[in-house]
Image (cartoon, rainbow, N blue to C red; front, top):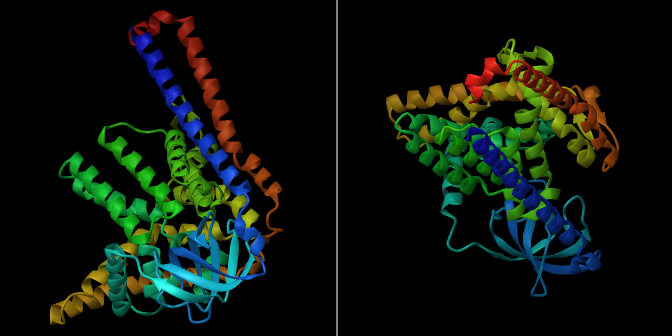
Length: 461
C-alpha cells in the first residue's frame, strides 16, 4: 500500500516536471521562430523614419545624454516585434509607459535590440490614461527622499529601494560597473525578496494566512511600483512559490522552483530567453540556490545517509560562498555580453550586500519622516534618521571608490565569444561531485537495507 502510494507520487512528480520541461521547450521554439522571422525594420537601417512605441522601464535621464527602451512598436500602422534602443538628448518628461512617436535615422541594433536611434526627435508624447497611480506614488515618495537625504546618497538609496538607477550620475554608474555591483541598483529578486520576507514574517505572527496574504500584496505592489521587468517577474513568481510552500508547510526543492519559474516567465514572454536581465537573474538565483549548497558540501563535507553537514559555515564564510556562487554563475554571461568582469566583485559584494537591507530600510524611513511637519521632536527624529542613512550610503560609496581604482584586477576579453560558456564545466564541478557523492551514499544505504531487511522492516512496512 505504501509502496503503491510512493510510486504514484513519484510518477506524479515526473509528469509535472515533464509538463514544465515541455513548456520551456515550447517557449524556446517560439523565441527562435520570432528571432528568425523577417523584421520589416531590418531593411530600414540608415534611413530616416518615424516609429511609434511605448517606453519600457524607467528611462535613464541625465544632463549629458539619456537612454530608453521602446517596445510595442508600430511602423506605418503595422505592429512590429522587438525592442528599439534610444540614446541622446531625450525629453526629460519621459516616463515608463509613455506612448511616443519619434523621428530619426534608424541604426543597426545590437544585443537583443532590433534597432537603435541616436539623437531622435520626439514628435508626439502621450501619457497613459488613466494615469498610473503607482508611478505617481513612487515619484512622490522619491521626491521626499531627495529632499530629506539629498546628494548622491539619496540617489543611491532610491536605486536600492525602488530600482531608480536613472537618477545616478555617470561616475557612480561607472564605479558600479567596474566593481561588478550593477545588480544591486536594479530592482531585482534580492530587493523583492527582502521586502516580501519582511512583510511575511511580520504579519505571519498574526496567522499564516495573514503572512501569505500581505506577502503577496507586497509582491504585487512592489512589481507595480518598479515595473514588471524580466527579473522582477521571475522574483515575483519565485516569491509566490516560496510563500505558498511556507503556508502549506512544504519545502520546495530549488531545482523545481527554478524550472517552474523559468517555464512560467517564458510562457509570459518567450523573448525573455535572450533578455540579459532574465539570464543574469536566473544565473544568480541558480548560483545561490543550487551551487552554494554544493560549495558548502565541497568545502565543509557531508556525511551519513541524511547528508547532514559536519559543520556549518559562519556568517562571513556563508556570505563569501553565496557571492562566489552568484558571481561564478553570472561570469560567462557577463563576459559574453560585456567582455569584462572584475575579480574584486566577490569581496565588494561581501562588504556591501549584508548592509543592503539596512540601507533600504533607512532610505524608506527617511522618505517617511520627510512627510512629518516641522516640530522640535520631529526635527530631531529626521536628523537622526538622515544621519544614519547617510553614514551607511557613504560607506557603500567609499567601498565602490576603493575597488573601482583596482583596474588591474579586471578580466577583459572579446565580446560575443560563445566559447566562454565552456567555463560552466569547471564552475559546476562541485555540483557534479556532490551528485556523485549522494548517489554513492544512497547506493550504500540501499545495500545495507537489502543485506539486513529485518532491521529496517519496521520503517518500511
